[in-house]
Length: 239
Image (cartoon, rainbow, N blue to C red; front, side, top):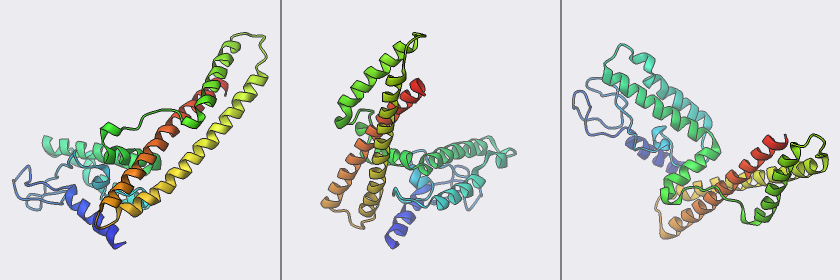
């Protein structure tokens, strides 16, 4: 717990870190408002969403703490409070609010949180791509053929679609079960990532473990997206 708190504190200190206030040029570090002139300070668009909300870069988070922090910061930056302020202050409040809202929406959803962390840690060269699970490739090709057959038959008023519709419904149930299994494994990896991430002194072994977890999460997220899209297509076509 102390290690998590230490990570959180260090990232919070970076959250608002700037060399000087935009208004009075006083030195500032770690505050939302300048201590000298009390002007609102801009959140850096270069900081990550975890840092923005004062959280360590972990995947299992206290959603109540996340929500409380979000509302606390929202009250500080809400544009309604800056209607009588200068143009610069209104612009800062709008920018801070937009960044804060995006960060909150991303982190409160566990899958979006994982997708964001993978992009953050692995970089754009290893973005999550949408591709089918290797062990379902043949089944998905067959399913797509069945979908095309169903669409073609649907245009014929006298066509009997009962058998084909039942097969597609069974395929949908299989894919939904597979999606649940992927999500269960993904949440297991949350715990693994967090245990590795809070290590005080990263070693080569720890870095290797993090890369392994990130690789598996990226693969799971990619497969899950593909399966979800197929399920959505089934629902839209068959109902």
